[in-house]
Structures are given as C-alpha cells and as structure tokens.
Image (cartoon, rainbow, N blue to C red; front, side, top):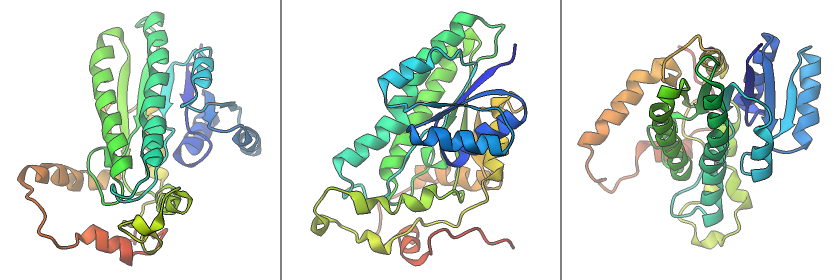
Length: 285
C-alpha cells in the first residue's frame, strides 16, 4: 500500500508545486488549501498537468479542519502553510503579530499532534515522517521581519523537541530552511501594511518606501530538496537553502556570540530595504 502525503498550504508557492510534483511521480497526495476557492483552481491545474491530486480545504487554524484531516490516514506530513507580514516590531498591530503565530506555529503544531499520535499507533513498520517548512528566518533575523522570524524560531523549537520525543516511536522529523526565493511571498509581505487597522501617523517607518532587502533565488532547489526529504531519499535533519549559503548562515549564527550593542547608525540591511527594487532576482556572475 502506498504512503499518503499531506501538504498544507498547497494553494500557492512551494506547497503547490511540491504537491503537484509528488503526484506526477505517482504518490498518493492530499493538497491542503486554506480557502475553498483554491480547491477548484488547484484541481484544474492538476487536470492540466494530467496528474491525480486530491485537494481538500485545510485551514490549519481551524479546529474543524484539523479534526477532519485526522481521517486521512497520513504517513508523511509537510507543514508548509505559512504567512508573513513585514514591518518594524514597534509598528506591527497586535492582531498581525498574533495571526502570524496562529498560522505559522499553533495551527501546524496542533495538526501535528493528532497526526503524530496516529503515526505512532500504526507502529514502527510504517512510514512516519514529519517535515516543517521553516525558514532561514528561523535561524537568523532581518529588520522588518521580527514577527515572522519569531514564529519560525518557534517552529524550530517545536521541530527539535518533536525529533527527540518521537524518535523511539519510529517517527522522523526534518526541517526545510529556505532563504530568499522568488515566489512572491517575500515581496508581498512588504505590502501587507496597506491593510493595517492602525493610525499611520504613529508608525516609525513609511512602508511605502521599503521593500524586501535581498536579491532572490529561483525556487527549484527548494522544491527538489523538499521532495527528496519527504520521500526519504534525503535523511538530513536541517536543510538551509540555497545550499551555497550554508557557510554564510553559520557565520551569522556564530557571530551572535561576539555581538555588541548597536552604535546608533542605520544597519546595511535597513538601507537596502530603501534602495532595492521589489522582485529582484539574484544576478548570475
């Protein structure tokens, strides 16, 4: 009997393409999407690509949807659903911060609780794999991403704990940690301020002048790596992507031990947020 894969947040971005590619490879895939309108759209795309893909509404913050997912007998879970709103930690409205943690942390962890217990109940002779789509932001922090990075740091903590707690039951856990990839996710996070219910005159920054402060990579590496992890071909725990940035990320993390308080000047990445154009791809050398 083939394994059943559940991909959350499959209505767009990494999740959608991972679900479609797995289905193209002949796997039994359930693509969970946040809103009902995405169901028919993704079903149509699957038909266009001539693949069999089961699409279900699954808002990870909805208790009823999470309960429904427990009837799907999942063997491999990719917690991919996530959102981000950019903004200074002193400007973000409370509801914006709470929403990021509800979608990125509490919803996925609560979904994982039920599915993990089902995996344990099936015994060690069954495939049991849980993967979290974390982020480089779960390891480092950029300006204007404090809430998002905070939620991804929390994801890292839960994933690490689960990896230790589920080991003796035959359940494996892994993380995917994408850096800046050009899917639209990073750029639109710097447009969410337009919907804030606050007093703009109290904001520290004028967000109409700011953009995501990094050049961005082609998403193919995330998709192929995620599929290798989900299918068990890649058994590493953490996957910082692009792989070419691993040494730089390790350097940033190590540098925290020697960090001193700021000197009162604008950091380079804050200036880059003013200077860069949105949707800027990495330039090939």
